[in-house]
Length: 205
Image (cartoon, rainbow, N blue to C red):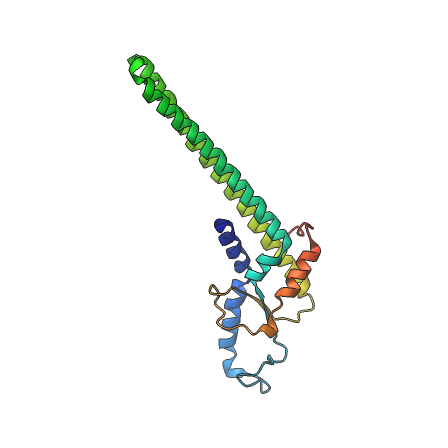
């Protein structure tokens, strides 16, 4: 489901956007006071006391079982709503066509009454579609917020020893990170840890 994925991606990305901004500002501020042991450009060893890592969001979404399960449930809900609305729209169209066939046999009063009935049913269907869209949007928002909370909680636990100063998000073609060294990719650890937690509810704020 394209819409769901787009929302979820933004939700997962938002958690670390502020950290990316702070990291960029921190690098600018520290340029004039870099420690003597800062490694030369091109080395793979980060500066002492400042380690970073990143999570590949595409891989996380592809392998985090709880995400896949809930995404599938949302897709089924969306498909069910679409099927229900299409069936009612077809029934209304059939009723309209039937009225056209019978038009010559109806009095003016009967025709006008039938038209009013059709218009009322059409408005009712439009309202029902609007209500369904609102209900789906609410479910999707709740889904995204829960995923965000799960990721936040896990990363706090994962980095409880403060081994990393920043954990960034990365997505091919949609990231502010221009290069990501696989040596700092902690995605597999995050996926395993979050899958191990399974359907456990996120901690309350």
